[in-house]
Image (cartoon, rainbow, N blue to C red; front, side, top):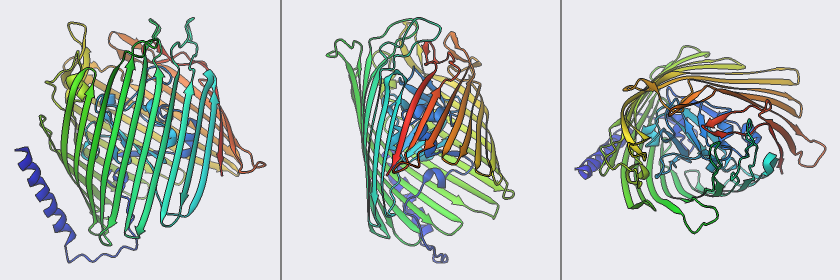
Length: 611
């Protein structure tokens, strides 16, 4: 039955694309069409999308968690500095946040999430955050929001070298190097990065130290592009990441555990311009993820391990039917093989069809619609949709609205982990509605979004009657709230100022118990003040996090702030930039996860050289 449905969907997809692409009455000439189609930019009608600047990345190059914690709406549950870091959008859990690497969903097929302390900030050219449901375009888990990590390959003649060195408290070190060379035919980008720390900070308000907290990781990236002609190019993206991390003690108990990560990601992409208005892209990807857990650092012969091997192929067809209509269709096939110490080898195959449409209906009114159907053995995958509408009243004010249906498939650990796995789990389904308001002036912008999410069959791990943690489907949950952002730039002569403010209010509760879900702060805010004069930049950033509940305990609210200065030395060759940053300047005692304190006041020094 599933095979018949898949064949019918393919036939329907082909018919639709042919009907639109062969309309003789349309004669549209385009001077240029870029071969790269950005799903997050081109098909996000009614969504909140923000980009993280290179400046913000360099200031905290060693931690993608900190970059996003202080510059987005995402709440991170970090189990101590450098330990496992789980994201949360709009009160959803970490498995309901999808992370995309060059358009490929890289959420762990075992855990369902991405550990943001197992991602290297120096590996990516663009970091984009998109709030709201995105399962139609980005797959399982894209319920609360998505984070996009992209590498740029262009064919503009250039040769660049970049070196970043960072040293800080607790003997924390970062070294990264990027080489980029491009012509009108070729592009090569090679990147290397290394992080390490003894991470032995003192736990404030106690006599304890962060014992067994050291970590190190290494990443290597190679991105290559070749342009056969103005109509065709090929791109290769490759990334390897290896980490060895001890797991910190808590306030209540010491630890002797450790954890190793290894990931390998390869993506081959071919782009071809069929005509002045039609683009065809094909992708082949292979992704390998492996973890190894040691419960005794003194005897690493004893361990538990799990790994997944994913192969993915995708055909992506894009048609600019006219200057007002854009059509996109995707056919995708994915196979995942998983094996672990706690379960036998398992396989999962998914066939996917996606159809997307953008339409500028009138000068001020535009809409977007996307539809998706997955065919998965043993799971009844729902028909998904996303509908977005934008009305631009004038050059200043834009009103937007969107609604979507999203889902998440149980992971291999959810189903088969021993002890505790639950093979009877059902897929999560979520409906979302969002209303957005944008005000944009010459030097300032204001955005106000309200949202509502209703989820059925939410998968939640809880201790059962035997004390064993096991996943269950919670009947229904709802999340609602608002997000407000304000950005302002102005200058007095050579003095340039910038203010960024993000505030969120979130209610996330189990409708059966009417209680707030665990680890969801009601109020959360961050702001940044930047001052620049000639070659000097001074910045101040602050984060407020409301109290959160965890089982029968509560993690208190906290406010933490950082301050820094950067200076470009013009008298030296290549004009390097040196920076000094003080983290937690008020020496605040705070926790992101219960009984796992974060460090008090600490510093870091950074050198950034381009040549």
